Structure formats: structure tokens, C-alpha cells
Image (cartoon, rainbow over all chains, first blue to last red):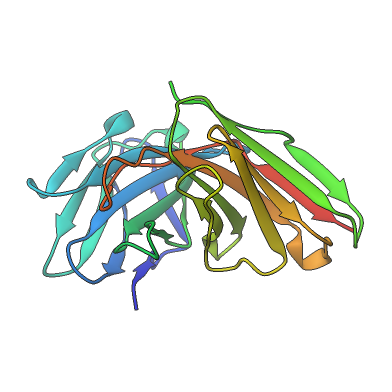
Length: 116
Length: 116
């Protein structure tokens, strides 16, 4: 079965410290991987995606993610966290075509708290 | 910038009422999606559409229907609202360049629906 797992419901980090939000996936074939962020009372915003090529992908707001095929992981990282990074983060994977369309599977989300 | 708008931010309805949630995007995207977001469950796909008058069931279509009469508008209909449909509803759109499209989705701000 195709799936995405975010093993941590919540991640706490001090401002200025590096942060990591974990994501593992299971899909058939080559994965297309995404990270989205949701600020309070807002819709989801796209952060970055991996399609092919370089395993380290850079995205918005200083975030980056590392694709690791052997570990089937796509962890989100930032070298120095800001209080304004506090939000809900979703990992997602694009699965194979689904009855003529295509489907994105989202993880359950990880809430990031950055303390000043 | 892509803009996805939803007709209401907050909605309160009574059990048994017919509920319409409207979504409009202004970037000529082919694909449109309806998700519901519940704590700990992430986003679950209700329905999606890859063209006008086309629709496909997602993972949880029961109790919902959709309508796409125009490319920019995708409506979600709760035929007879029930309390277990209390949730945050998110609309999204994306480009469809090819069958194996890896384009990111653009989300509306969401509608928080409460069914009493």
C-alpha cells in the first residue's frame, strides 16, 4: 500500500537551533515528494518538492529536504529555526496515476514549536 | 500568484441540511480537489476533478457529491449534513501538464464547517 508517515506529532526546538521534521514513504515506482506548511487559520502552502536529480532540495523560507532512497525518507530541515516557523507541516507523496487522474497522499502532519 | 478562494471561512449548519461549499481558482488550472482535514488524520481526499464535468472519487466520498460546470469553479455538496462531517474542508488546484504530473497543489484558506 502506498503511504506517508510522519512519526512525530510534535517537534520542539529553540530559536536559532537546527530543526528536522521527519517523513518516510512507501510507494510503487519513483516517488514525487512534497512538503507543505500550514500557518494558523490558513490553507496549506507549498514549500518544496523532489522530482529527480540532486537529493538535497532547497525551498521557501530557508527550508531544505533530503531525499534518501535507501531509507525511503524525505526529512525537512532548516539550519536555524525562527519563532515564525512554528506551524503544522505536511509531507506528501504523489502516487501512480489513479483512475485517469493522480493522487497525492498526505501524512498526518507534524506540529513544530519554536521557542524564543 | 495563484489564488484559490473558498466561499466561507466558517459555516454552521444543522443535521439534515444540504450544504454547498464553493471553490474558485483564477489560474486556469485543470485539476481541482476537495479534502477534509481532521486532527491526527492529515488531509483525506474526498473528490477531485481533472476537467470540466469530470470527477473522480477520492478516499472518502460517502455523503458528498461535487459539481464542476466551469473550469474555475469546483463545488462540494453535502446532501444531508451529519455531525461526523464537522471538519475543516480544503480546496486545492493544480496544473495538469501530463499524466504523470508532479505539479504542486495550491490551497484555499479552508472552510471550517460545524454540523449541529
